[in-house]
Every structure is written in C-alpha cells, then in structure tokens.
Length: 358
Image 1: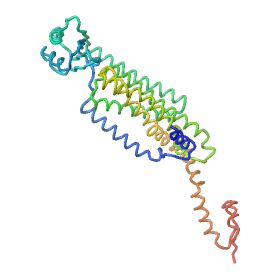
Image 2: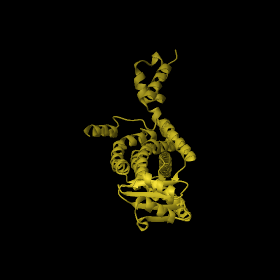
Image 3: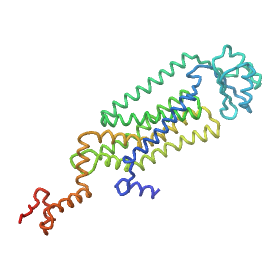
Image 4: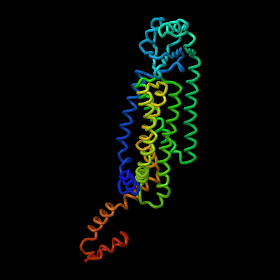
C-alpha cells in the first residue's frame, strides 16, 4: 500500500507520467474492436429477453432435492414446446420459465406429479406481451431522459465539450456491457435494466472526477502559456489515476462476490442479472473515464483557435526550439559578432548587432 501511495505521489507531482492522451489512437482502436465484437454478437445472437419483456409463464416450486433435469422432464411431459428456462434457486427452489401457454393448468399438474407436491403449492405468474412492451418502452424513456439530464448538468457545471465527451464515454460503456451480456447469454430482466442505469452513474462519477481536475489544471492555461491543453489534461489523468483505481476496486469487490460467489457457487440465480451488468459496467466505466473521455475532450479542445495558438507558443518556448533558433542566428552573425553573440540572444533577435561592411 505504501508503494502504491508513493507511485500516486509521483504521478500527482508529475515526476512520473503515463502518456494517456498522446497514445489515444491505441485506446480508440481497442475500444473499436470491443464495439465491433459487441455489434456482431448483438446482430447474430441478440439479447435473451426474459418473460417480463416478451411475455410468458413462470412456475416456482419449493421441494428439497429438486433438480433442473426433473423440471425439464416435467414440462416436456406437459407438451411444452419452444424455448424454456429452468433454474435452480438456492438448495430447494426451482424456477421454470416458458413462453406463452394456451393452458398452464396442464403444466402445473405435470410439475405437481413429478415433484410430489400439491398443485396449489406451485406459484404461478402469467405475463402478457403487452406488459413486456410497456416495460421496454419505460426503460428506453428512462435511459433517454437520464442522458438528457446528464448532458444539461455537465454543460452547466463544466462545459459543452466535457458534456459531449462524457456522454460518448457513457454510451461506449453501455454498448460494450450490452454486448458482453448478449455474449454470456443471461436473460434481460428488470434487474438488468436497473444495472444498466446504475452503471451510467458510476461511469459518469469517474469521468466527472477526472474532468474536475482537468478544469483545475487548465483554468488559466492560455495566459501562462507554459503547457498545452493535452499535456494539462494528461497530467490530470495521472493525478487522479490512483484514486480512480482505488474507488473502482472497492466498488468491484462486493459486486464480484455477488456474481461469482452468490450466483456462481451458491446458485442465487436472481442476482446474476444485476451483478453481471454492474461488474462489467464498473470496469468499462473506469476504463472509459481514463482512456476515452479525457482523450476525446483534449482532441475537441485542441481544435479551438486559442488552443492551437497556445500549442504554437509552447513549441516556440520549448528548449529544443530555442536551441535551433540560436544556432540559426549564429550562422547569420558569423565570427565578426565575436564575444557579443550571447548577449545579443539575451536581448532578442531584433536587437542583434549589425554586421560591419569592409
């Protein structure tokens, strides 16, 4: 921990620096690959919508020693065709989801016979397709409204280019998370939608932290003229790097325990929808705030005339530029300038002594 704090101190003071902004093409290429893969998966496999979105029937049975194979055999004996999902929840609870059924009494009777329980002890839930469409519409409205409110807030609190960069990074996070979700094949449930909306907040939290430091570093950058906007933004990312890492790690640990321990080892299937969306979203949100949002912001600001002029001034005052100018002037004045050459450069090129004609 002390070594990590030492690294954080050197990054904050600028003694050690990682070039995030200068190597932005690498990060863009990596994100582009992830987006392309996500698009291919969504186009070929698509999302596995739960019955809350596409409609169907759900049966829950509580019986010690019940197995998934028994549940599948029971619904097959009832003549259920099409896609169905049988999940073990805990040690003695089984959840069976099917598509829309003409009569669910036959399925209940088959389940009661297979597991040796009363028909009334089987919990049944019937969801129509119209209700699923309404839930989908509300989820889209919530996502669009969230993006609009965030853009308005960031525009007022920071600036329009920061708002644009933050929204691009957020959309990047959601799209990649949805692609991974489709690749894994988990059902999309209302808990999944809640997870997607939650990761938007986490993604923006990391981005706002970095942007606040960028604004602090670039507050009077045009008047001082000592550093370019990209360099100041890169310094801000380095200064907040350890903080972003620590915050994200602490947030990922409990989510990972829910995903891998709760859903994986203990069989809490109802938690995996939310935990997977949170886990992937937190990881991509941390990545985008460092490698996507800030480089996009720097790229947008560097196109401004004021920032272009600043870059030229910084380049002219760079040590290499001064050395080249001095060498060029020395060739003009020649040996007749004598020992006064150094003083001439201190006074500036316009005050250089004229060469005497013989």
